Amino acid sequence: MPTTHAPTEALESDACYLAMKTHDARFDGSFFTAVTSTGIYCRPVCRVKLPRRENCRFFRHAAQAEAAGFRPCLRCRPELAPRAANWSTEDASRILALQAARLIDEPDAWSEEGPGAAQIAARLGVSDRHLRRIFEAQFGVSPLQYLQTRRLLAAKQLIADTRLPMTQVALASGFASVRRFNAAFVEHYGLNPSALRRAGGATAEGGGGKAIEVRLGFRPPYDVSAMLGFFARRALRGVEVASTADGKEPAKGSTPTYVTLARTLRVSQGGQMHAGWLQLRFDIEREQMLLSVSDSLAAVLPIVISRARAMLDLDAEPMAINAALHAAFPHGDGLRVPGTVDGFELAVRAVLGQQITVAAARTLGSRLVEAFGEPIATPIDGLNRLFPTPAAIAAASGDALGQLGIVRQRQTALQAIAREVAAGKLALHAGADVPSTIAALQELPGIGAWTAQYIAMRALRWPDAFPAGDVALQKALGVTTARAASEASQAWRPWRSYAVLRAWHAPSPSTVATEPVAAPESPLITTAGLTA
Image 1 (spheres, rainbow, N blue to C red):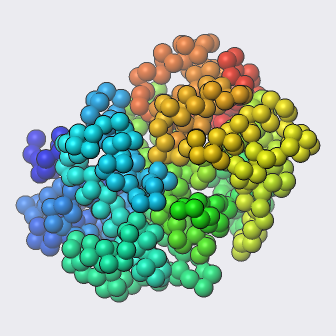
Image 2 (cartoon, rainbow, N blue to C red):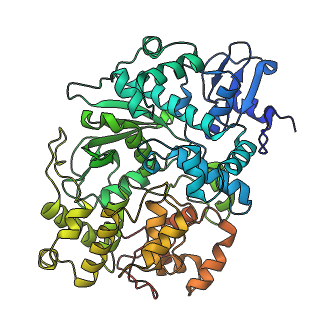
Image 3 (cartoon, rainbow, N blue to C red):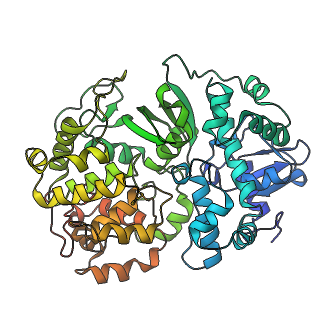
């Protein structure tokens, strides 16, 4: 098998060339093609003239191509490619390297100084030297080189898609100063940021109160209707708005097709709180999602982009997932696991959804927003409130929560989660440690295994979450106990979260529930297709 770089995961060069020749979007972000005659590296979907085979080198990561001296293409823009969300359950060194890369890729996991190799090593419980060794063996570059490429590509996207001032671009991308930012650009790309902006011809605005617009890539197939419909059915009044093509409310009893989703959000960084809104729309023909973000969130745009990608699971790798699941679930190849832009919000909604239907959970959530959420002005009709903060829910009285229809057991669970998050003891984002977070959740009152697994699936973005006690899931799998469900799921690791979604959406009468069915060992009661 011919290889072109050092990492243990070798690429099949001929297969990569064929994928590039056919512009196969299924491989977008899975590898990058560097052309020796131009010094540029591209995505497989790039529409430039096909280079000669002998002039092509193939790299699994953009950082490898940049470390070899290649510059990103200004036409296909490698920063738009979906991330390579590889997972492993066997090789300890590979798991450690992937965890380190995940921390680098997840802005919510960064400290104010950004993710340094020493900090990441300490977080993972290994030495700095050991982390560098296994990281270079896995990715072919050092953690610092990987991080530098991630920052440069984030900055490149902001330069190309927005008119944000360069100082703001530098700080939002993780650079400590404009001087370091300019020096890194000149060293890696051979031109200064201003020249890159002129070459890219950015038209989107970032200032004066106008929305910032960026594009985010994904790999097909993608069931857009299922994803947007999922969020539309759970949209909380004032926080989320889903729209159809004509912008009208769907007729009662009809099956609407939603095309846009908008919501408010709050992002904390460096002790400062940033509040605003985002709007999402899919461009299926180009395998992209169009993200519009309020100008008030410009300073934290990379975090917003990361959360939007997680919310719609844009970094999923359908080929790997379908290879493991298609035989058992042939009708779900385009399904993704819905995420969230706020892990605390997701946890609250999971608790509110215990033992009630989706519609009832939505009503309770909307009441909670109305009572404790802050008002916010947006240009989108119906979008006017922020989800309550952990501090607000932790400070709420039992009487105030009870008047909303929230029973005492759930009040206790909500306030326990709120106190832990507000105190910084519980992190609910994709960079959090999954096993320790699940254990911490289950120590809280009113949080059982189902709720913890559900939060891990959607907020922690763990692809191997499996709520074995879910009755609808057991029915879909043809078993009657959590143990039997868990045993049946072993063949689907590490993609069991996707198996759960496919089981809930399977076209079988036995998996469609209109009323909640009790799960034996958990206080969370679900219907097929997720309650919370």
